[in-house]
Image (cartoon, rainbow, N blue to C red):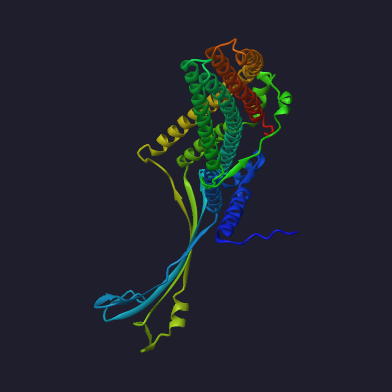
Length: 450
């Protein structure tokens, strides 16, 4: 027998609501670490700005190469002269209106300029490398930030789960305390402590949820996503924690990092630019040799032949003239401008050398700190695991004694608080080990995966 339900407006509304809920749930995109990194690298606006700067440097480099080519220009002109003026065709002064056309083509090419053109090409080519290194640096920094935020989300998700478990336990304890109070087995103080424990558990959940929401928002910002768009972060298998490497040799990590780290490469490339800039500036001490040439002609309606009009084509052809020559410009005194430019270029080079060394020193310091941090995080994890197991065993014993009235509510709540804190500490310690290890992988140039 089939049961037929009447289709009412309420039924339809409920079906629509259920369908909308399912669509919303299905619309939540699952974000893996790999997808988060790829999307951030693809969409991040800071990277796009760096790539645009890189494109500008390429354009400057190409233009510096084109500067070796001849410069050619044309200058056609048509005009009227009124009153007494010189006839451009005879150079004699006449008092009449003259219509004239003239024009020419000029070309010049620099033969020698103290090697400035060549040195500028080299300098601009290195500047392209600078912007490429800067783009690589921004990408690497972004990857590390995404991984850091991803691990923060995983940590906060587990903290939310633990906080919900605390609420469940506190609800049971409050219900038991209420029943014992109702039959006179516990005092009002015991009931108040149970209520306070419940309120504390709810506060912990609110704090953990807020931290989770903020960490999700930051990750969306890295990926240039709509902050209102809902996403779900995929949680990796934490059982692989035992595979996380925590023992590193600081010297070998530094050696590898100095060879591949984008910060160091960027500083070294800028140093090369500054060194090349000295040669470019010194080129102004030398003479410049320019080869030039031109072709010109003109027409004037005042010009006649035997009283007849001189045709435009014939006149332009007869007046055609050419010139070619070499120009030499020798710098004698320019108010010490060149000397100042060379001095500033040398100072910039010395400053770039210092910046390179600072980058290497900072990198070495960061890596040593990272090695110490991963070792400390591993020890902290071992301690928190022991503390959690001890508090868990202690709570189980106290809970059994509390159920039969052998332990008061103060001792019970204190034991529960210690257990909850040790659980939070253990969660954070687990992810901290992973994070510290991934930081070392980052400096070693290894792919960061979970």
